Length: 285
View 1 (cartoon, rainbow, N blue to C red):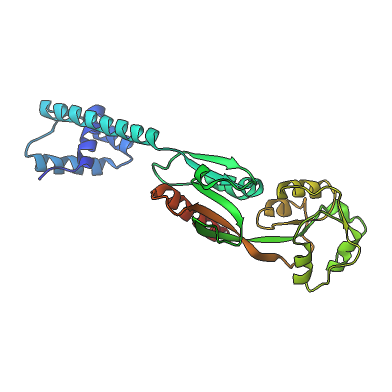
View 2 (cartoon, rainbow, N blue to C red):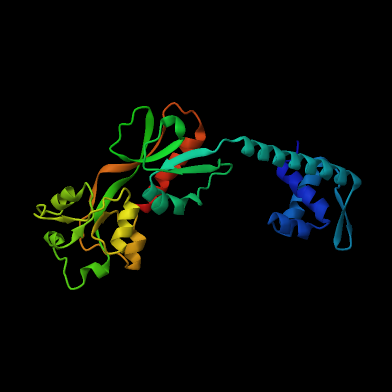
């Protein structure tokens, strides 16, 4: 019966430390567990490995030779893993700016997969050619040819504005938004409809149509106007009170945030990452 690699690793630590107690500290074990492991190993090998010299344990000559070979083997395994990880290509991830900064960035550091590849993030609102990414996060209704789709969360928006923009005015009904400048957004009509309100006549829109929700949020913070923003992505600004969402109604869908990967990609890493993104989305829901 051959001893386990773990037992040999404990032997090497004991020989190196010349102490079961110090070896236990290095290995995050109890001294009793280390002592038991060494007695078991001696039984498996059929010969003593240590002699006692007061409080010290002295390895036998054979144990020292065996520990030296074990150390070389462990170093070889560590080196092989380093080479393997260095040869693993990075995972190319592309995501739109607001989702990347507000949702993705706070979570990426927690990606737990051992031996996971380095993640290279391309932040862009443009649609990338499938050959240019391994995983893409995009917004839409699905149906991308040649891509596997993982639903993350529905796209949600509701009006938000800086408290200073209210001044003495009130926003107690959707119709009152006609008294404010609105930041352009394609879903205003849908939001009014969902809020059980006909789109008010004579709505005023700000002169600049910002290309990202992040810029919309910045304009809202500056008091430029009322923005349609995602309460999920911009919840920290609501919590801090620098933006307010005066209405309970939140337009949800029909578009979703999706994680996408190529259907013909046989690698495990992109699929694992997409599954992890889905798990993060479920926790945030």
